[in-house]
Length: 255
Image (cartoon, rainbow, N blue to C red; front, side, top):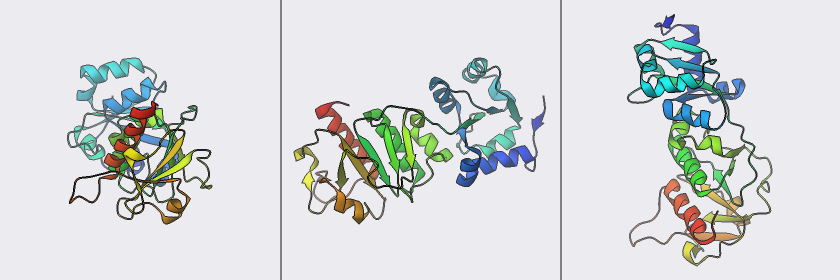
């Protein structure tokens, strides 16, 4: 068994590049999954990784050994503990990563959709994707200026949701989500979420963490909605706001 221990090894450097660069992920059509949970999510979606990256110690752990048994034909690349600690972004590396193809789910369109307007924090975007999947909103539009949904941090925050969603990156037509009506969450000139008729198909816009929703989208909105909050508070984290909106709609009307 050959174990990579040098940080200058070309295979190791290529993995670091895949981890760090959205351009490299787009060019290769590959993503880097960090930890057994994401690997298991990939397998449950019916796909195999292109390659496992492992330490010898991790391969002896029961959970990881079981994953390897499910994929006997997948090539394995062995790293030293030092190189694994450098490659993994987890505070406590779990000893296994996998290179896999970018998810391409072919799901039927969901009744509702979500539009990510320049969401810049990978953790926020991942949490938003996880929330959408849990709410049954599987059709996602990622507008220009939104962070790469396949960065390792976003993948971790989404906890496998990528494999159950259809992501439309940089749609060229602002009408791509029609015939759904458009809902934006804003404070000014808006109705309470709990007083708004949310029946029928909707596309929800969740906006940039600092600047909010693009004015052009606000002009097109069929509904301007705010979430009632206690006095003295001004706003919610975008992922928290999305969870409240999507699950209020699901509570009233189902998926």
